[in-house]
Amino acid sequence: MRCAFKSNRARLRRLGGDRRGTAAIEFAIVAPVFLALMFSIFEVGWFYFSNSVIDAAVANASRLVRTGQIQKGYADDDERFEAMYDEVCRVLDKFGDCEDRLTVEVSNYSTFSELAADNSAATCADSPPDQIEAMPFSPGGEYEIVRVRICFIYTTLNPAIGMNLSEGGSNKRHLVSTMIFRNEPYEKN
Image (cartoon, rainbow, N blue to C red; front, side):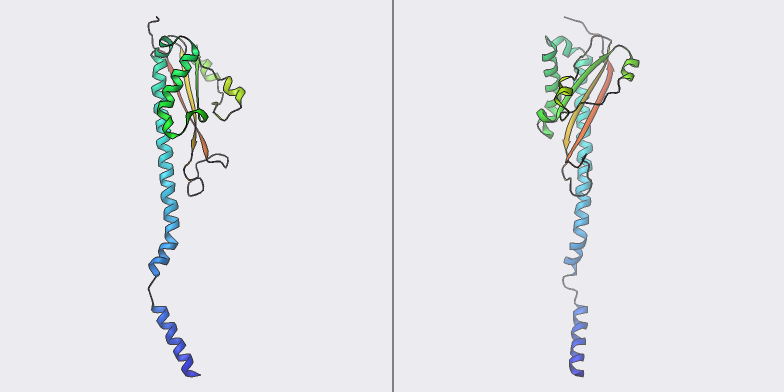
């Protein structure tokens, strides 16, 4: 009896001293946390990059209105809207199809007080159809105050791991960029 107890204790001592496989166990414990952290950092970085690209697209498209290129270069508001939409979509189509994600709204105001009084929310592509139809496109004339507002529906990359930037349990987020300026003087044709 004593001999069996002694051999069991010797086996336990050898097993406790065996260090093979500890690296694999430690990796299995640390890897999920590390990968979740890395995916979260990548997600936040990509989100800020996307936001920056959307701001740049709004600034470039707004320049067309501010300098009168939209007003002078196209015959009617439908053509002007298409040109403005295409200018923005040319940049943002890298993030997905603009058809279901992008809205462009251009409003003009006679005074900054009138602009300040308009605190309406941005209309996005997933808004009800009557709201999308009612979106203004009025680039204004010389010296008028204009607000260009774009809403882009951004799809998050990893909604289940790490940092979740989505809204309302979906994997989407509304990115709104606004540019306010006074139109420059330009010659009318």
